Length: 471
Image 1 (cartoon, rainbow, N blue to C red):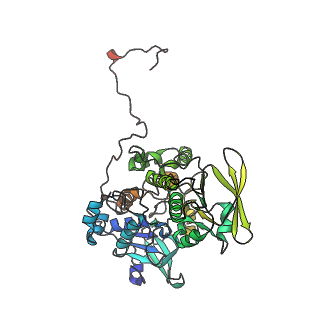
Image 2 (cartoon, rainbow, N blue to C red):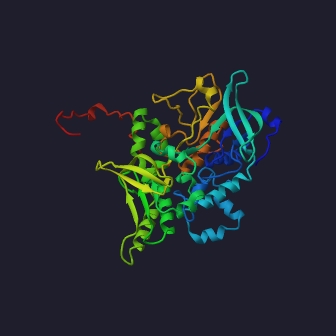
Image 3 (cartoon, rainbow, N blue to C red):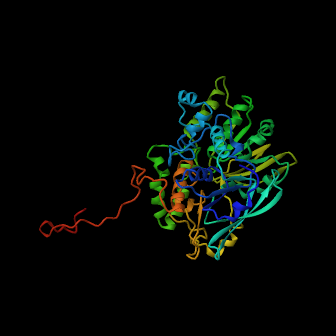
């Protein structure tokens, strides 16, 4: 839905206002639509329509989670907003059935989300949320927003009142400091992978291309460029800081790190342990899926069939120290090999930065809540088990977060497979009931030792154990 928000709707307090409409808040909106008895929920998004990583909808690229990780199924498989119901509405159920695809294409997931976003009530695109404040007199949150046109120009101001807020503003592309000046300079061919498709023709026409980053996006960009450049004249480098172009952990028990059971276990760990654990788990969510690795190797191998090697260089364990321009058309990267300690320079015509994403800052938006927010020892917002920001007890409403809680809930925070479960958890908390009963157990793995009192032993059965005996 787009267009203006009726003033009478703004004057009536909502049960829930969502800030941002990405997959996670879209999941929340879809499940909120099915809460028995109704829930007054509305969602604001500054973009004119739903978009999900449009620059990375590369032909053939698939999701890294099964189609069951749609917006609602793992919380409510009977919802009208399931992926299967989307296929049914498009008369595509039988083709999907015979395709036998457990992992759907990324472009199809985007089309499914757009289908939901165009039909759900309560979604307001073209609305930029400017601030969120607590009004102690009304015991409500005030959400100020600006209605903008498709070009981002302000058209009108508005304010909504709500008992609860959910922040789902997503992440933004991360550019390493040495490359920031080049990426920000107009006309310099240094692009983040988030904008890959918009610059694909420029990259294909470039004499030499360098891809930086060893995750799934870097692998997909490298593969697409490799397939599109002539054999023997590929002229492409792929560089990464990681020690290897490593596969993502995808064993069945390894995937149990993306279950509610692990999320609860992680949240209960001491803060220093959590902070140490997340960086060591990079291969759970920053590796490359095995099919993509195989496709890259197959393509490289195919180019050796008639003798010779492709003009493609794949080097892990490398960091970019500094970067600059050479004349007016090329980029010079100053590299360091982390294990060898050696340094070199690489001259290239274009660079793709597959360097990941960072949480989008909300400090300015939440400035009015700053006196009420509670922080951890690293200055990060504290988030309770039910995804609520920990606020001063005088605030009777709740502010929930989606995909901004990796430091408290672990590597599953950005994972689509936990979207429906997290949305259901939030809605159960907002409603004070349990419209979405959730399973108590979701994994075979017991991630910690349960502390139980030792059973009492009758006196006649007690035996002394020598101190030297191993037990």
